[in-house]
Length: 309
Ligand code: FO1
Image (cartoon, rainbow, N blue to C red; front, side, top):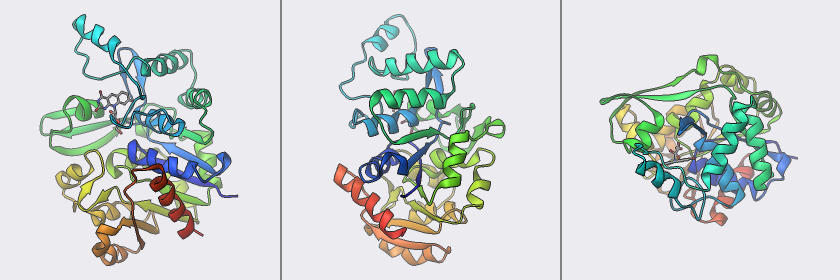
């Protein structure tokens, strides 16, 4: 039996997690998810990355939007706007149920992990999704337009402001959950999904004790580049690499994983980077990494399992 742990943010992580879920039994896969994009809107606790992975594995995600539920409507939000609220963060009418449920449980004293388990059970997700921590951690973006929360940067300002630095408020007081710790102790393969290294994977790694646990792990660690042909598949990864002074390429991403991964996977289009990445001390594999269909998600997951044995 395998014991695969995938570290994931939003869409890219969710796609690869879905690929793994199609070939691994429920007790062979744990997805540890970023929670630093979490925030509160309209009094509700929003956990975007957990929901993106959860909805994707449940087969109910809104693929066109890249977040939220399919067949969604926004009538409640429209009413809030009519009342004069500056409702720039969109919560769909169906998605509101997830948020009402989560917020009510948290306000009753339940943990994010407990809520996640209840929601995934209800949606029929059989593989394990774990928030990296149950404690509050919030990505803050220092930009040329001032300091802002992640969702202000991402949604309200459409990633336009120039990023100067990124920090994770509260991370110093976070604890890894016992379930996360246990999955890291028992894993025989660690996968860094093709998620944003600065916004999705760095906050997971910033939780005290997480890096130390990886330090005492002796199995294979494999990262998949979220940059293909100098462009991000989705989101601001390329723009942020450039603004923070890194190479906008798989090489620029690979440099973020030195000391964390022994295998780095790049897309066929980036084959010319193979040697430069190898010179960082990683073994490099080249394959098709762009996942559009469910078959492509499964193929990449199969490729990763094959090279890890
Ligand atoms: N992304 C947007 O671009 N606009 C939105 O209004 C928006 C609302 C939203 C609501 C719930 C949710 O789970 C995700 C939502 N997202 C929205 C996506 C979210 O901002 C990003 O996917 C992640 O935080 C980045 O991985």
